[in-house]
Image 1 (cartoon, rainbow, N blue to C red):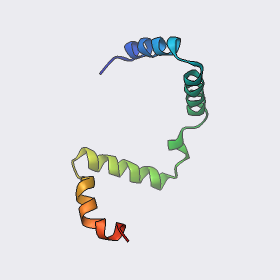
Image 2 (cartoon, rainbow, N blue to C red):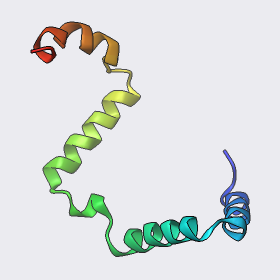
Image 3 (cartoon, rainbow, N blue to C red):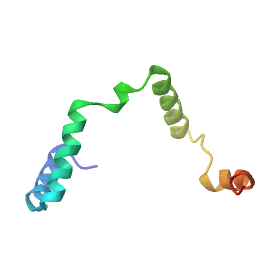
Image 4 (tube, one colour):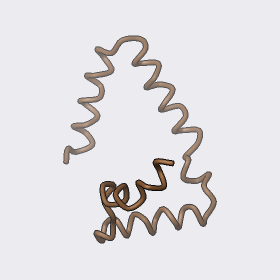
Length: 78
């Protein structure tokens, strides 16, 4: 993984050559991030649920999309 300093240099190069629309989108994204962190706005139970899901995924306790679709396709086609 690239070091943060290297990523900053790379991002700065992109910004220096970006068109107006892209710059405005980046600015809006960064402005929103500084104002609100969506994680902090979640209720504690939702945060715990997400954290449990991430731990399960890290432990390999997952079911593939293909497996789920095979099992539940009959209910989705109605």
